[in-house]
Image 1 (tube, one colour):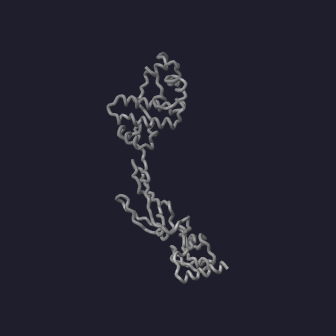
Image 2: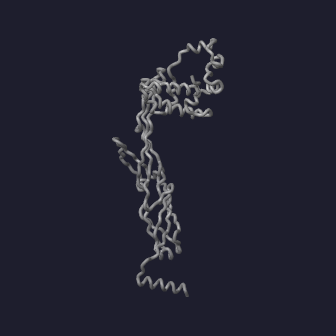
Image 3: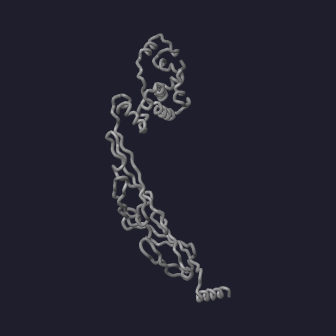
Length: 307
């Protein structure tokens, strides 16, 4: 009879970590589980071998003995000779001991729902045949995205959400941010064995805006200004989320200059009457077509600059 090599049984190297052992065991235990291979004696034997190998290699002390004495590690553990003969008390004790057909630790599969399904079917809802009922398991959280406009984020909103067959009312305060998450308790996946229902996590996504970009509570935008106002200075009307406002430009305002309009940005979330700022980038418009009078004036200006 060939000697047992637990490492070969699990398909791992001798320097495998405990995590490697668990991973290999889970894979093989699922592959050869009797409930998936009904009537297959070969699969049942492999399942037993996999469980035996795991029970030894996952235990640091047993693994040390196996690495040193091979398949005779158990005799050494009991104080018997390492040669594995049938004589002596230890040999007689081992030969008469009743071994279970297979055994394994269900805790290795605590997060594997596929195995739990097989486990429940095969053992009738008990863990490892030890008569303990399955522990309550809370349901998983579910996630969904809610996309809103920048205007909705600015003013706050209430929206009815339809998720599957359920409807939920979502109320957002002014200043809600991209990526902000809201939790609807008890609206996620159902628990098992009396476990609690998970939550529904709603992640806020704010749609891109054609005019504004947002950084924190501040907004940025571009504003076209005619050449004469940029050169001589004057007033420019600027559309904002707070309504149309008047911005004063100094003479000689350059193309690309950024002017700040205080308090005209986004509301600070959950804070009364506090706002970020609006940063306006000036885009000086160069006229493409001139009337006869305008051309005359520009030519006169050119003559002055040339004299």
